[in-house]
Length: 511
Image 1: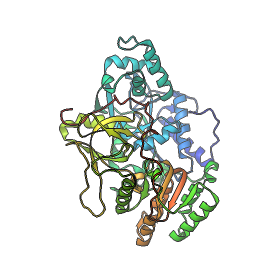
Image 2: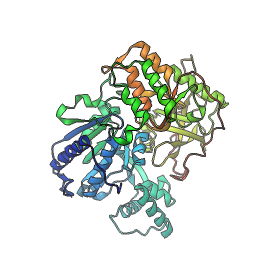
Image 3: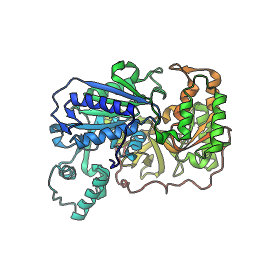
C-alpha cells in the first residue's frame, strides 16, 4: 500500500498496539508476521474513535498492510476463493459506496457492508479465471477468450484487485460470469469498519454475526443515524473496548477546514463567533470561501449541504430551472440520490443484483440518459467499482409547497431516486468531495432553535459534519442566491472505461 516509513504519534501507536494485541489473541501475530488457523475464538470488538485529522485512516491503512504482509487474505466482496476456508481473512467495510471509494483512493481495498452480506455466485467456467487471477491456479484455457483477453484481465486485476473489473476488461458482461447472488451463510474472520458512526443497530448486529474480530473506526462528533434517537453504536460498547485518538497530526494542523471543525468543540463558541472565524479564514486562505451565492456548476457533482428539507427542494428546483431542464425528462448529467428499491418479494434476486452493484439507499448517481426500454435509465453510480448500469427507474422531483413529488417518468417498479443537486447533511455523512458548499442560513436557523443532540448544540454537530465533507475547499454560502451555469450539463467528466454499459442489470417487469 505504501513504501514510505510511517511514524506514529503516541496515541496512534497505542491504538495500533491494542489492535495487534486483540489480533494476537485471535491467532494473528503482526509482530512476527505469522498466522494460525482460526480456532473459534471468542468474539472480540474494539472501537477506535477520533475527530477529523486524528489519523484514523492512516492507522487503518497501516493495519491492513501489516495483516496482508502476515499472510491474511483481503476479501473484497466481489469474489471469494474456494480456498478461503483454509486462510485467515480481512474485510474492510464502509456503510456507503462513496465512503468505500474514499478509502480505495487512499490505497485501502474497501467495499460496502451490503456487498459483504450478499456474495456473487460465479459460473464455474469463469471461476477458473478468478482463481488464476488470485494466484490459486494455473492460467486456464477458455475457449471463448483469447490469450490477449486473458492478459488484459490479468493487467486489470494487478491494478485494481477486482475480479469483475478484470473480467470486464477481457470483454465479458456481468451476466456471463455472475449467475446470481446469495446471502452469506458462513462467517468471515477480521472486519474493519470505517465511518462506524453511521451504523444502525441492525447493521451492527449483522456485522457481529459475521466477524468474530471486529474493529470500528469512527468519529463521535458526527451525527447519529436518523433512526437511532441520537445514539451511536459506540455508546453501548464498554469503556475498556474503546480508545479515542486525540492528536491532530501535522498534515491536518495546517488545514483551515479542520481548524474550523475543531473550533466547534469550544462550548462558549456561538454561531456568530463561528461565522466571524470562517470569514477571517477566507481572507487569509483560499481553501475557505466566504460565498455570496451558491455556485450552480459545483452542484452537478457536489451537492449543496443543507439542514432543512424545504431548502433542499428549493435549491434543486432552482438548479433545474437555470439549466432549463424540462419537467417531463431529465438531462444527461443531472445528479440523483437513490432512495431505495421498490420491488416485490418475488423479485428478490433482482433487488440483490442492483444492491450488489452499488445501487443502495443513499447512493449518489449521475443520470446518463434513457435506457433501451421504457422506464429504464442508464446510470453512473458514483464510487462503485463497476459504476455503469441500466435499471428501471422511478424519479421523483419534489416541488416547493407541494405534498406529492412530480414524477417525470417511471417504470412500474425499480430503483427510486430523488434529485441530488442538494442533500441534507445527515445523508452526506460518509461522503467526501473536493469542493463542498454549506448553506449557512440553514445552520443559523438550527442555532436559533436552540436544539441539542447528545449534549451538544445541533448546529455545531451539523456544521462539523458538513465542513469535514470537504477535502480541498469549503464554500460557506451566506446568501440565498444562485449563480448561472458556465456550461450545459454533461457526462464527459465521468469515467467510461471502468465497466462497459453492457454490464446491465434490468429490473422492469419480465426483465
